[in-house]
Amino acid sequence: MKSRQLSSVVAFCAVIAAFAMPFAAWAADPDWKAVEQALGKSGQMQPGDVFRIGMPRTDLSVTVKGVPVKAGFALGSYAAFKQIGDHAMVMGDLVLLDQEIPAVMSGLFAGGLEVTAVHNHLNEMSPHTMYMHYSGHGDAVQMARALRQALSASGTPLGGPAPASVAAGGPTLDTKAIEQALGRSGRDVGAGVFQVTVPRAEAITEMGQPLLPAMGVVTVMNFQPTSDGKAAITGDFVLIDKEVNAVAKTLRQQGVDVTAIHNHALMDVPRLFYMHFWANDDPVKLAQALKAALDQTNSRK
Image (cartoon, rainbow, N blue to C red):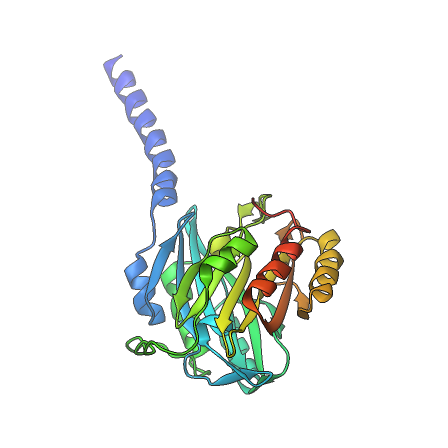
């Protein structure tokens, strides 16, 4: 009798152990320091446990309609990692010159990553600059290693120390006036660029998993001071189908150029479209224009 009870206890413990192993794997987080080392750039943990690594194209000197644009304004490659169960997912955007696109794309495929979009964000860019969106699932360190290998076919600065900060000086922005006109708060993202982000109100998912603002699923409005008290604006609105024309019409009525409308992901729910924009004018006037466009969307208040 005792032998039978002992066997039952052993069997029960084995069942518990079998169930515990997946839960242990489920709870394990990647070694984010190892991810940073594999990619060659440092990152930061963002809301929603998203580990985001910025890879700005500080090596490029790009103008839009003759206006020099800073890397933090319109040239921000990034990788956003999130642990999901026993694996990680990554999604992001790569800023590439035309001639870099084929080799980088092949490198992403070779590393087991997927390309979800290739397109412009702005018009009249010199040199001509494109943007490649990508995603992947697997081990975070291995995906970071694959991404770095793919980017070795581009001039994206990786592996070295961060570039020296730009000395203070030049035109500045009245950020309080911008925030008041938009009805939203923002932040300085460096080199004089002021950024306001606005998440959508509804939940966004892909294959049942949440797509969070820190992963790039967020309306972004960047302001960069130019000359004569003006500012350039760019960024993108995250929209559902029925909002696209309402927002485009509002922006055009306010004198803002709509420069691109396209997807970023392939299986997002609801289906999202991203609308990129550009203008160079009085910053408060532009903030009011963006506010009018935001009012056409289901964005968080």
